[in-house]
Length: 196
Image (cartoon, rainbow, N blue to C red):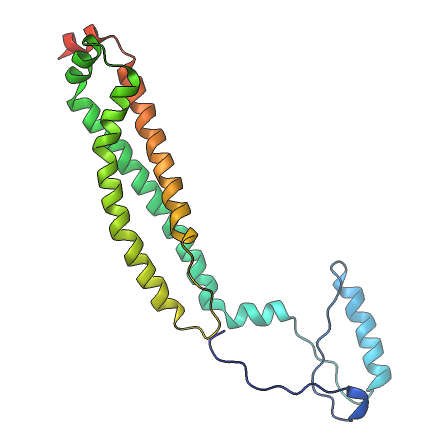
């Protein structure tokens, strides 16, 4: 994938005595039996030539070992980043709730619904979320585009590559905010005002 594929010539092996490589697709299952059949057939056709074989998946794994390590490292980094982000959101919402317990109690006494209180906290967090998305998406697009230029054969970046993770993270953020806010908003306002 790093270099362009050069010109190739395919010809019928019956018209030539030059045998170099064969590519054979084996059915999944018992590979040992298939290799025994191939060895027998090879010795019948070319008894003086040694039968040497490699598996394509092993060749590809060796050729793209760096990419596979990068994929593994990227997966671990993504999981750690998600944990850190979600813990940060939980901490931010908890801190906001702790500072505004009295305000929540007063709003409930004045007739605010739980949904209105949830919206109040969503309104506090989502501008930060949108700002982070506005910084992260162009930066990651630029980095990924630059990284993909190392490959001759490459995939094009699609909008869904960025939109779907943002929607999932936004939904998880909304769920965390709603869950924590509902717990606080369902408490009796008298208790909130008395504890302050």
